[in-house]
Length: 196
Image (tube, rainbow, N blue to C red):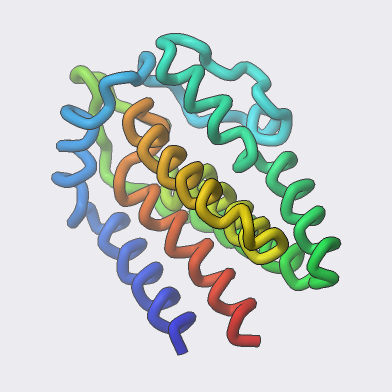
């Protein structure tokens, strides 16, 4: 039953983001919660999304730390890690969940456009279609499958996931609503796997 709560909350958040109702929160975050951000740039290309650290920004240092810390949430790396966890658990449903949420994230990013956000007076075009955060989504799914496959790693995985969420915000990779959307979608997938 909790998966329906995740699904409803995810859909409601997406609707609010698309309508611009949460733009004041995200704009405040752009102005005050992204001290390590580099200069605003365009969204990553398909090649940049698929190849780990391809054209990754390394300046300032907070961006470099975030690139490394969230590397397990990169598309290809996360697939390999989830597949490893699924193999250990003998549960291919984890791979299906990874594929499903990645498709949902990709489709939504091509459909949902939020009202403009600005950093330093410059339109941050990368945020126009950044909901939900694929970084947060895949980091959370990686943490979930590894925590189930190797329960002794739960505490360090929780610390790592919290660090990733904070770094994604501080380095200006994503807004708070992007991160919340990614975490909700990962939670929906993990809950669906537990309830089946």
